[in-house]
Image 1 (spheres, rainbow, N blue to C red):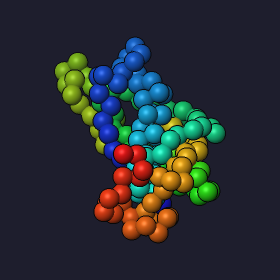
Image 2: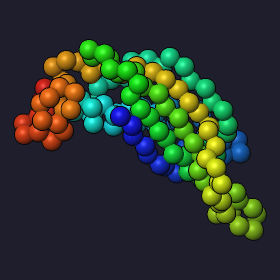
Image 3: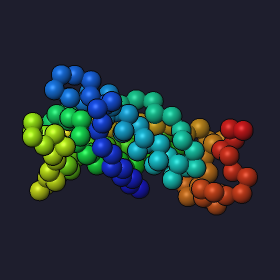
Length: 145
């Protein structure tokens, strides 16, 4: 199972000089993709418990567009192994004369990759993996309320 989101890094995401976006923002996007995967797989947001590895490969700047991809690589009793990649697909390319200039990259640039583990407690699991009718099943709130 896979999920993808595309998002533009804004000036609010810039944390360092030169409008550089910090890696924590990308990890947050990986978390968003993990949440979508868990909802699709189990009908519950679950919890992200650990990263096994995180590698930052290229800088990200305010104005860049990222495509963030994730997939479930392993399904345990309550754990879900996942892998993630973030690609820059549009790069901010400002000039003094044209501060809003940007360019579509001919090939996406891998800016970060990671793997980790999420957990969905058994009582909260429903959907395709549990055989209980999937997301949106009547009365299904995952036991949270």
